[in-house]
Image 1 (cartoon, rainbow, N blue to C red):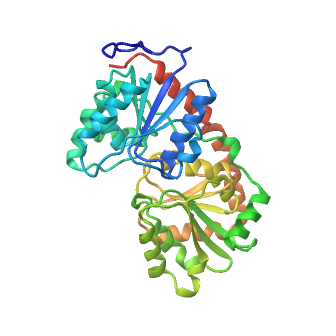
Image 2 (image 1 turned 45 degrees about the horizontal axis):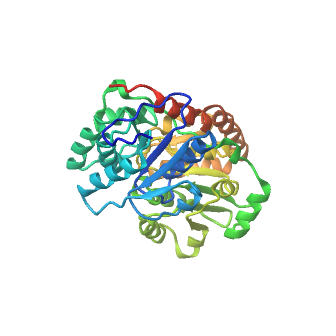
Image 3 (image 1 turned 45 degrees about the vertical axis):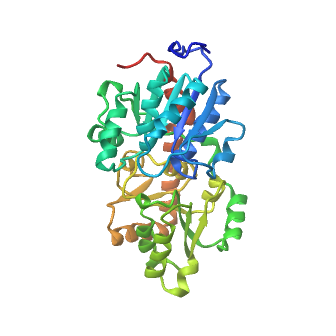
Length: 382
């Protein structure tokens, strides 16, 4: 660790022990946040030194990091020019080999601060097609100039980056998200236990979804699509927490008769997603925009057929033999696709098996971490 604050550290080599600081807006439960936690643990397992920098305090996933250091550098509401200085001081104290930012606010604030702190490598991951306000878009385009490697999680996300942040094409590398494949699969004991906990009969068919309750996930669409199908034999379970929960609850009241509302379960945040997936028969995603959502590979690895809106990177990761894709916003089309699969057990089984085979080949977490490590140690792409 160099003693002179004015000296830029030497870039890491393939055999170096890397100190990597991932910067994320929060540690609330969500796919992006769970990915940050997984990368941190994978880096530690490989002998590196992970740190996580958050722009908000707390978060339900903080406990999942265990002894991995978390540095809270809170962001004030609105545009916060003082955050640049606070992050600069944090990076100068930490002296990471790599700063790895995730999504909009960490890019806007973290990349310039890391550059000023003379961090040897700056990597950014774009997880979806974020809709920037005009001023934020200008800041994101400027911040992207300080990034050595700009990583969209899908080809569709790369196209969104070309429209929005506009990083130099030579700095772009697509790295698809990966999951710990061994954690997901069938578990009859977990299926029975989760269903008993949620009050769902063993014979019922369950449509489930997992994700942050945010507007982009459009869970009210899923509620409306499921409303005609709900009965004692067909249930809907939504796992997650977030700011859109009141909108989902309002959709339940507006779309579902009082006597059927108990057929919908909002579990809140859960830390046992692999077990909860075992209780489902079908996975549904109603998003209006996506990058490469972790929930879909997790569902496919768990033998679940998928019904999803054909948005963002979703068409590129759900093959025809593993699920059904529908246009976003077409409630009746979504309902029809769900109904057909709920009625056809053999089709669900075939799609579940095909999805698992596909996911095991494509979505290895080890592959993803290898790809990121190769960027951490590459010479700057300027």
